[in-house]
Length: 207
Image 1 (cartoon, rainbow, N blue to C red):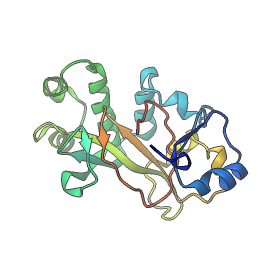
Image 2 (image 1 turned 90 degrees about the horizontal axis):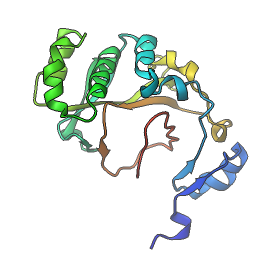
Image 3 (image 1 turned 90 degrees about the vertical axis):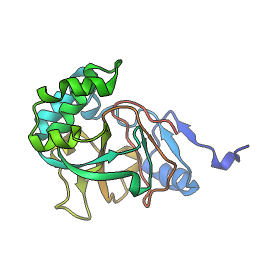
Image 4 (image 1 turned 180 degrees about the vertical axis):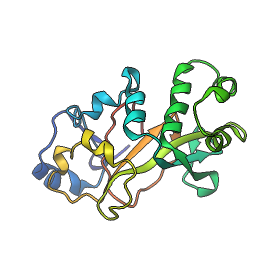
């Protein structure tokens, strides 16, 4: 039986910065805020089912980002021996996602094999995506804004589509990062070194 003070609480109304700081944050347990980012431009513009991938591709272009490649997909373990970070053009990752989206109900590996030569990506990225046994890629912690290292923000152009959520308006943020996956995946239970607010623009996350 989970103790009451350790339960995850869901808030239908967005708390003010004062209430967040005095009543929610000190408990040091997860909390869910519904509707916190519905006013963001990203909420509509990044939606994959409504042209969001094309928007992102045109907005960001061929900027090189770090993608996480897993040998244990669809599970991403915290153990660094089970995954690696690889440089990948953002536009290539979007091409990869679009390809998978076309075949969301079919066999991923067979479809990718049939489509790999038609993808508009470089030879280097072709080798990265298809050169070994089928693997899975996702973008993990790619910086949109980084207040500690202002040079490290490959996706700065996407900052215009987001805003600081109301509960954090009085906080000093260290960074704002994009997490984006090409398909369903799971990650192992882990602790993060910093407190985070995960804003879900599209899709869902279960804990």
